[in-house]
Length: 154
Image (spheres, rainbow, N blue to C red):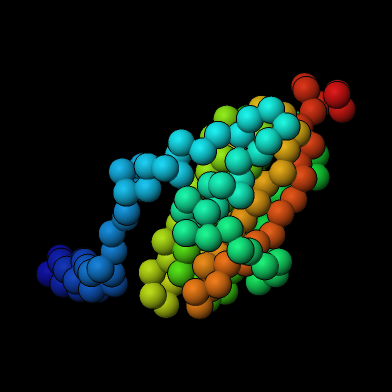
């Protein structure tokens, strides 16, 4: 019985030491209010304006970001998206099919692995854009996702 207590206590201490001390999240809805006000309007996507509001510039180069999303999504309510960008300090996901351009922002901790998977919702067919800040420069990848109504290809 004593051995089990010792092993349990040792495992608990080991787990506590593995928790990063400087782990914290930033609330972008409070600190970057202007980003959330950028809307996609009819025939005028707000993705570039949202990138400028979040990063301070809209000068973005292609490359260094991997974006994985389906070509066709039969259910626009659940679209799997994966973002990867080695060396990124911040990753953001934008789209031009819903009213708000910005979908998500990830601040990558030092020595963190910028590899995120999430599910997003799109009202209609649109372009999904991933932007990464790497060494002070912005890089992007984009992909058009066709949303079908009820899987009928409409």
